[in-house]
Length: 226
Image (cartoon, rainbow, N blue to C red; front, top):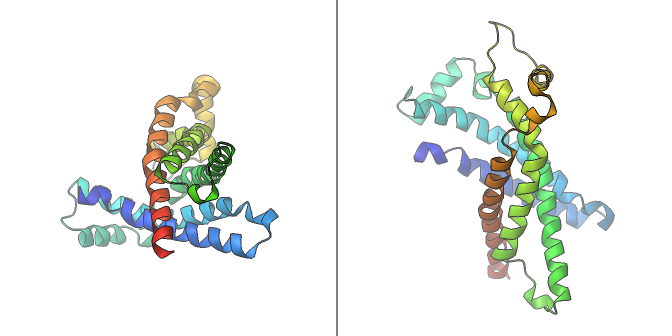
């Protein structure tokens, strides 16, 4: 259980610290017309930071899971010996290819859906004092944003997965464009949408839990700190 959670905790922490810092800075320092894009910029930078944290942690986790190394320190050392920083960040490009677009779709949608829920609740006669977006609203917005982002980024997920699983001749590695062409030739555009239904369902539920919890924590901390 420990190794499985090892990449998730520091990556999530680094993401949300960066996301909140950049979003709040944009909202406070930019004109209203520009600050609306703060979630887009914040998500892009935050996901980049999270990937830098997550990728080496994932490699270490996988080494521990296959019992190649007895401890985290040994896993890091043996990975480093295979190629230094490049070895620790193997697969970073493929990870960024999917995770950056996903975050850049999910979080602006999440913020916008929360605003739409707030506007709807105002039309139902609720007062401003009762309109803090709590766990239920955050979970609904998070689920919808996660599902839509999953739908939009499914082709990139298919390309990344097929690219990682491809076998290349020694010393030769194809590009993502080569992989995309191979997928298209194997069955047309439909091949880019393989697995879309379970992916959307999985990401919807993930958004409900992940962003619902995040929103609840933000709301609770705001109340606690006054």
